[in-house]
Amino acid sequence: MRVWDDPDLPPSRDVLLREVQEVDGLLCLLTDAVDDKVIAAGRKLRVISNYAVGYDNVDVAAATARGIMVCNTPGVLTETTADLAWTLLMAAARRIVEADAHLRGGEWKSWSPQLMLGQDIHGATLGLVGLGRIGEAVARRARGFGMRLLYADAARKPEVEAACRAEFVDLETLLRTADFVSLHTPLTEETRHLIGAEQLSWMKPTAVLINTSRGPVVDQQALAEVLREGRIFAAGLDVFESEPIPTDDPLLELDNVILLPHIASASVATRTKMANMAADNLIDGLGGQRPTNLVNPEVMSS
Image (cartoon, rainbow, N blue to C red):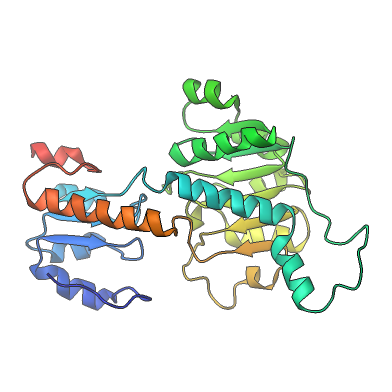
């Protein structure tokens, strides 16, 4: 068994291409680009186990063509990610990070009626773009705040609508209506830059955008522009088009956006469960069993 032991940085592409040549199984992170070239280099490769629920870093079609199983870690991080989405929503709405910096910087002189005014959450309208496991978990939490719930998705979810009292609408209606917009869609060719300049222009000037899905779902440059011009109130981001975020990114200059280093699933319990699940997927696949979380089940019949 070979282990990459740097806790902070992923292996370089050259290292990945070299090391994959003689292994039967690969347990990778979402930072590892397991594309067709890497898969082709894995002459003995039988299982790719991704330590993440998303698997846009893996060329599933290329793996499937070679009869290689691809696995992920769904479900286990749902509630923890929903918690983080709400953390961002509440912190952005009430300017928590900005207020903390204000106090620590010695700028707090007195109680003031206009100091750090934010947006109310209770009774507001929450729009969810994507109502899968995580979107549904976010929706359940909204009921405690007496919020109106809207959602946009590729297909209606009648059972979730009933359970969460959510209304199915198109994306434009959601963006024009919601006070808070939280993104929970996977990254596909259809969802890349789903939230671009035009879509951002539909949002209220008092609205807050939250993204804990994948960075490229949002046109980051367009978002920076509307935040800088005050055309939406704030944003909270855990994911970015390029990770880590470049040091010259315009978002870093703005006070009305909270930026986190992709930590939505980063609780001790959840990351441990993800690691165990990824390992179990790998062991099962190499042992000739069907992994519990198999992305491409068609390889089992090939």
